[in-house]
Image (cartoon, rainbow, N blue to C red):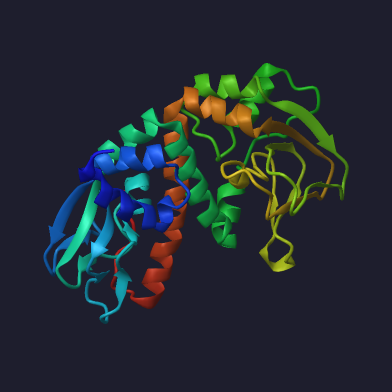
Length: 307
């Protein structure tokens, strides 16, 4: 490994958003990282223009423009992670509170790295999904169903399975080739009313797409549960990180669903990067929408994410 990569690699390894990423992939990021000086007052993230790069702070501090002196990010922190993945502006402007040294990763370069290195893509999906799972409002929004004209009955053919995937908000509807391939991996299953079919602590080895019926979904606390209808995807967020589930799903009525294995799903994402990138962007946008709402409740003059 080149001596020029040692310092960037050490700083990237400390970034929480990159924790656990393998050495070869940290090195790939380090090769593209540019060390920059951000003089005091530099606008690092705008609340009106889409983010162009993420920054990992080496030394210094960033804060919100016009807010009391309170650092948003310090050494080791990553700024612009969600904004770059979403292709959105920040919920509120972020500026350099003091002269700050950072590693800058251009957004287009980052996208190219994710397309070329599947483990980085899966790591980013797992990171954003974990952040979504940690917020019940974000989790419910990411896993909710749509408003389909009719439920799909048992005995679905391939066209029905593609339709079930197409109408779910969890999947980008524009990539029909990816949906058709994914439908080939989907297994139809049914559950009786009041049947628990996903449990806290069980392996996150698959997820489901609800085709008919209603499901209660959430963690073990009743207040953080929500109801999912057709198009809902219980277990979807946990699929990226693997491990064990932190949520459970119980059929409220008889439920018809499609079950998709984790490995099959990741294989489809590897074959169809645009679907993976759009899922990543959608989850990031969902978190930024909530961040913007929270920021406006504190400061009504602040702007929110803009497309």
